[in-house]
Image (cartoon, rainbow, N blue to C red):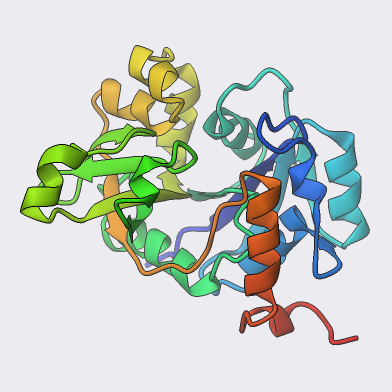
Length: 255
């Protein structure tokens, strides 16, 4: 049996509303997006990694570190559209979208989102999730998700779901999406042709577009210590955690 080629695409742009220029913010001497690229390359199931951006500064930074980056349109409102555009110029059956603001991502976790598509040829999309506290459920920076009994996504929101009022009585565990999503190539191509949807816009969540058009998204729960860097304060927290991170020595030489 031929093993499908797997490509990871890291979308990044300088014009972040909450933290402008964050892809090139330095951590342990490297731009944040470069940490993501190098860590993704450590995953044994990924054949290649490319950064997709609309900013020349990011392309130059990645190339200066020996990586590969491609320019995409500056008009994309969703990172999945950016990933889909970049994937159109590549040859791979499985595309993994890895957010460029996850500098502590574990290479092992990436295998967890790829493996379901390798094991099930009928599965077109898998999305990593991890548990959160009630306090974290209140943060609009985290995309929360609910799912059915087969672990298929039912709804994504930046609000606290399910209801804080009732879930507390029932002790329901809440989950967030990690922004690490594996797509079958055909589905990713279809995503760009789908009409953007009302709930996608309201929640500002890419995956709502697929749900509203009737597609299935398999959720894969994992334990993750990674944090998404959305603000300068998050960057400080990431810097502190990185000092003790076991993966850092795999791709950054000691000074």
